[in-house]
Length: 590
Image 1 (spheres, rainbow, N blue to C red):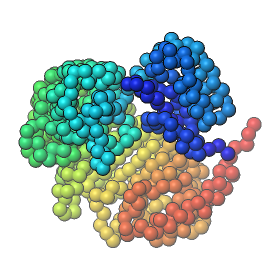
Image 2 (image 1 turned 180 degrees about the vertical axis):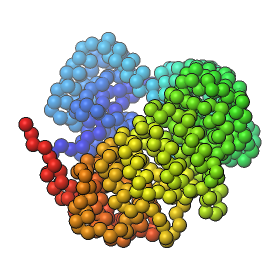
Image 3 (image 1 turned 90 degrees about the vertical axis):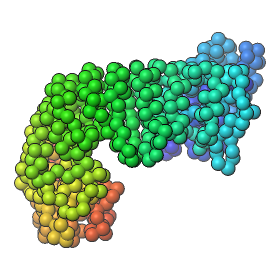
């Protein structure tokens, strides 16, 4: 029996240098053997090969390497924890490295570049300062700079910082964090303006910085930055640090291709992404902002970018359609719009067609009025290509749900959803406005036939969708599930409310799909708005029509929670129904 193994990157420190010894797969029983090494993270070995040696990064002098005693001892210890085959590789590697100092130096350089190219945070670089210049508080885990820094103290820092290409994109191996004063002290004592001259991408949130420190850290980065991702609190920013960041980014990083800004909260005072920001970043390919409105003039400058392919924007409450033309966003392939209904109408009227878009998410901050419902779906059908779009979301966001004080007047029904049937290439459809729904079996059959490539389908199944309890009216279970089991062979996730209280006999279960056997691959079913009574019959029917195995992390509402838990428990017992069906329909081999 094969035991699970983890691939470790083993490091060795000699003097001021840190290098890679080897990357090895180690069984759990042998993990204690790693005590003699510094372990940096975990890396999976996709090849599955045990003891895959990736490099030697000893920084020993030539004389030391010729003696080979330390190197030989380390690799011999490493060989003790590996399989016989891996030990042979280590032995050959050891002989090769001891006999060729030039290879040692070459591989050392490669290993150093590889190790430092992708850092989880700034901690490894700060630890390159002299050991008496910093300290880690054992209780809090905070790393502090404890003395002033001279230019000579920065030698190792600058030596390795030139190799850093990605910052904040992988998990840190320790829970050590920077003290709040570290950024200020680094900025005060740094020997050069640019400390990260070759950084290509940074995720600010992973650095655990205060909002007020972000502009300073951005100032350490060279002008070649391609990607930046920021998270902002926006609860209190009286000193306008966010605006300072925007100014630094637009003035400093003209090569920027990917910008993401996630805001934790809506700003107390309305702040807009300024027009100067988008006008100066001409190379943008991806622009994504959440909860921070974009100014109408900044939106216009985005529309002029020839290479913009991905855009997520938060529209202002009032948008002037005349600022945008039909030629706007010529290369856009993916769009996410968060807006009030009237603002989306203005945007859709101004940019009537986005023929290149394949993925569209429309998140409405309010619930459309009854007279706006049909217009909303009509504009969606007009704006996006019926043959090109593969993923479509029309949903409410948390703003719409928090504003709702009474049952919504809008009811999404057959006329609304029928307009979406033209999108024949859809693989994912999600319609979850915070309103009422009136669905029926005929509509489910039409949807199943219209989307042969559909993989994920969710309509009216979110918690904020409104249904009148306890007299909930939804289509019968057999009218909902059978069409998708018959016509949608690629469907894996389904969420359409149905009534599982209908009376079914064993013959009904056996004849669940009279026209053809089920070849459905559905495994995830959302039952949040699905009333149920007889859990055994429902479990038998579900197993007859498809391979359900998961009911979602949220599970059904409390009204039927216990019943649906019982259905999930019973499903394996009804597996024989599907097995018998598969056996009777299996084609004989030639």
